[in-house]
Image (cartoon, rainbow over all chains, first blue to last red):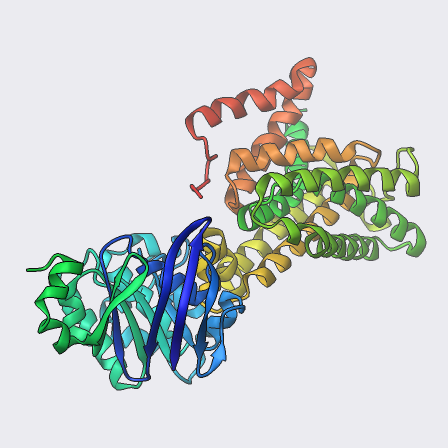
Length: 234
Length: 283
């Protein structure tokens, strides 16, 4: 479904992505795992064509169609949703407005306001609260709910479990797993090995802008040398 | 006498609000300090004056001013500003240049004489409120100001477009990543803000006057309103307009030599304590 081939992205003169290639299929959770500053968020931003970075070479295709030169909203219209790092909710909008700004409240097909609120009951209790009045977990739920309102086929999630309480992480992992069952593809950016192992079907390890290891979660677990080398895990 | 001055302050505030609300919408969402906003105001007044003379209808003059200036906004945004998006200083300099060009253009078309848009028959004369006789037209301006406030409030808070505009003020890139063509939202906002400048021009051209450099005066007042109220805040623009309108009116009556100081003195003090204005949020 999503295919990234030999991607080179730059921040100014800084050559941040140096040939990243990866694939995500429908119904698959793929983790992009690496330490801070290795190019994980840059990969996500490059796929959405958010500036900066600037993609100088390489191909990004979705269902075989090239995304490279499309503007971000056109990419999102092709049903690629973003759950960004830091949530990036809108402080001036209420919970419900985050959802209805993308799709009329009376729409009945695909993800609806009711369905998002049923998936995240905590949000239903906070429907009139504003983005900046929510707890960390509620913010992440809303960021996921907002992404779902475009009825995505692929969701790009940038460190969704960052800064969340363990019980919230579990809840979120449950939701992500249920999205996979519905056939959504998910590209999960993580620096937490255990979150990635808990969810991902396949894992790419990224180090200074290059993919240095690729395999199933089980294969990675059986490879302590790579874990030690790239993630510092013993 | 006091009541009369208060009414003058309030009606001037209403005019300021019509102009400054458009200014703050554009400033809040597009991050453009549109220094051509005053020139758009003046053009709105002149166009309204000409349409009014041609048709004899004040309503048509208002519609003509708003539509013409909205289209001028369209040309300004799509023809010029789109090429310097993201470069704040270039945008400001560009709008300043456009302001000069529009001013000279107005001078060529309408000359340097002072015009006043004819007050329509149904708004001539005065009405008695309590013991006070007050011009109908100024009350009409007050009503328009209140109407514009309510209409903008409903637009921003009760419609999907309004939610998109507010979200765009918060984080335009994220709105785009959600599948919304933010440039279209920008354009609609720019045209709406321009139309309000045009409407303000017609109102100001009727109870003040139209002359070269009238644009600079209204622009300075609008800037002060937005600085006091806070970038992009509708309520801030309303309160800023009230403050400036009343201070200006009483300043002229009580300290005619210091009228500007009466406005900018308190503004400077306010900014010392609230650098983002009363309702401003950090970008």
